[in-house]
Image (tube, rainbow, N blue to C red):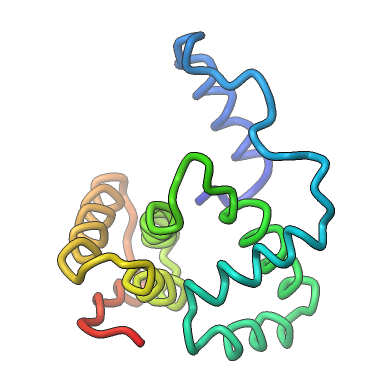
Length: 157
């Protein structure tokens, strides 16, 4: 997960320079005429499917710490960004989020998304494999975890 917009831009410049022309995107993939309230509905649905019974408390936390964070997370994060399932399924998105969060040493959010992968249908073994591979890649990239990486739970409700 990239930390700042300049880092994202620089990374995309490097990727664009290395990518063959036939693999480059040439147009926006998302619908740009969709009203924002539709993204909010999509985000709410995806958020609830990922967080399960913990969705109200997690959303409440985000709303409490900064109301715009709660709105942005649900509407832009889960509605517009993660809710775009034309390329990745919700489960594949969960795997991607787990890997990005492991690389950014974010244990609370790692646990949320390990659990979310299980709720999306991943087996314990599949989720454990994503965690292990992500940790290996992050470690080889020089990532050090201050508080460890949460374990995959055997049963998630």
